[in-house]
Image (cartoon, rainbow, N blue to C red; front, side, top):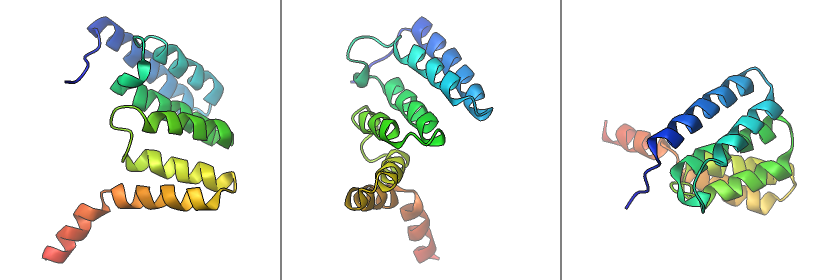
Amino acid sequence: MSLVLDPGIHKKIAVLSKEGNELSSDHHYSEARAKYIEAIKLLPDHFSNWEAATWLLVAIGDTHFFSDNFEKMMKSFTNAVQCPAGLGNAYIHLRLGQAYFELNELDKSADELTRAYMGGEWKFLWKMTLSI
């Protein structure tokens, strides 16, 4: 059973996310992060049960990535991987691999980057190539 957000809350989260994305596109990472955090606070208790938490934590993690704050980046993506559709998400594992690499935890980096590679869409393309 999938949890469904109240439409009013969903709309507010979508607006804040859009504002955050625009700020992030303009390299205003701190302001963007504040919008994403404001959005995540709108989620009901146990926010990690909601799919919206996954993409909001990813967005927060990306702002940390572009700000070279790899410890906070790792925390955001570690939380995201525990949310719906987080585990096995190639993008999340890629970012975790990058964070671990920057923090000089090379074994963990290799593990996460391998997960990203194995979970990526390349498998579909590879199968298509083999069938030609």
